[in-house]
Amino acid sequence: MKMNWQWEVFLQDPGGQYPTYLQWLMSAWGWTISVSVLSLVVALSIGSLVGIARTLPENPWLARLANAWVELFRNIPLLVQIFVWYHVVPALIPPMKGVPGFVLVIFALGFFTSARIAEQVRAGIQSLPRGQRYAGMAMGFTTVQYYRYVILPMAYRIIIPPLTSEAMNIFKNSSVAFAVSISELTMFALQAQEETSRGIEIYLAVTGLYVVSAFAINRIMAFIEKRTRVPGFIVSADAGAVAGH
Amino acid sequence: MNIDLSFYNWEIVRTFLLKGLYFSVMLTIVATLGGVILGTLLALMRLSGRKFLVAPATVYVNGMRSIPLVMVILWFYLLVPASFYALFPYRIGQNYRSEISAVLTFVAFEAAYFSEIMRAGIQSIPRGQVNAGEAMGMTYGQNMKLIILPQAFRNMLPVLLTQTIILFQDTSLVYAIGAYDLLKGFDAAGKNYGRPIESYLLAAVVYFIICFSLSWFVKRLHKRIAIIR
Image 1 (cartoon, chains in turn blue, cyan):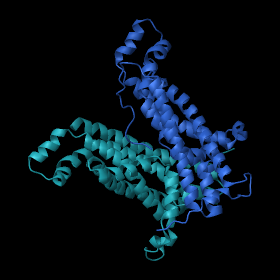
Image 2 (tube, rainbow over the protein chains, first blue to last red):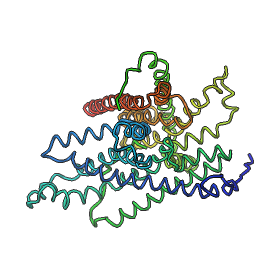
Image 3 (spheres, chains in turn green, orange):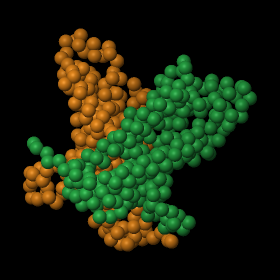
């Protein structure tokens, strides 16, 4: 089979905001990266709080609330959550009306991922021997102190591998933002494919950029893992499940 | 603004939602069965130790797992040729192009994820079981079919089912090519009756109820299996 490549398509003028499709592609990549990185920040912050809340021994109601959070955001498809944030939330909560769609998508993706990160944080904390907690208590630490100085530093090191795949997932999941017209890579793929009819070249470029992004985040996490490694402490706990996307 | 769900009646449920639910469930079942079969084959290839089998299976699985599902859906929609759809009788191929393309995509895509689960399942079987089978004079095929795979399936059943729930949630992404699934049903009902807000909210509730009950069921199953073993 002879393929008739036409990579020049990227130098054509889409007749809009950008002089060439290549520049549009780069801008779309920028949107994908911004949405993913900001969602990751939201997901890590909320996921950590919710995950920690699920392991607090003296506060069962907080743990129940945190469990409910995880169940809620885990059992609704991401696309449905994005629609709810984009169409329902601004209509029901008047102050949210002026919030741009970009921010709403970050909330959607961030909250969705926070449930999964909370699960990993909880697993990481619970994989530590109970003696660590008691040792902290015996030292006279308050709950905040023994979490801060004893449990969390170890727990986060343990869950770096599953966090890595979650960070890569967030880049992949950001593609769902096309459904509410965020001009990220998938949106670009759909529109440019329709305008130029050179679907294969366009899709190859977009797919390549997704793979590059996921690989980059993978290397960054590997670097963090290496830099934070504690000599003599072997990270063995496989806190993440095999299933997932 | 007020939420008004009164416009939902049996007529709407029947014309919009059931049709979508039927396709979502059908897609989930076909993709699970096809994905597990294809995934098991991929796992066996990767564990075979023969380079000409290991390499293509590894490339396939890792490739699929590093691309967003939406892009895979778009790729299949773009690449499957019209001549394939022409194979279906009574213009089914033309009328249900998105749906057929979605089924192909999900089987191919989920196979990569199921293969990782099956690989873990096969590797969880103690080495002694393999040796025992071989000592009984069983061939590789007999050993796999009678000793290893049944145990691997059983060990991995909760994970396989969890993956199926994720798969059911992911079927909503066929929105990208306009296939008529459950979410599309809610979408269409909301747009037709000028009530998109209620419709999306109800979609979230329905998906939550389905997925939450399924996860609860899987959790119970997990406990039961754990006790028996």
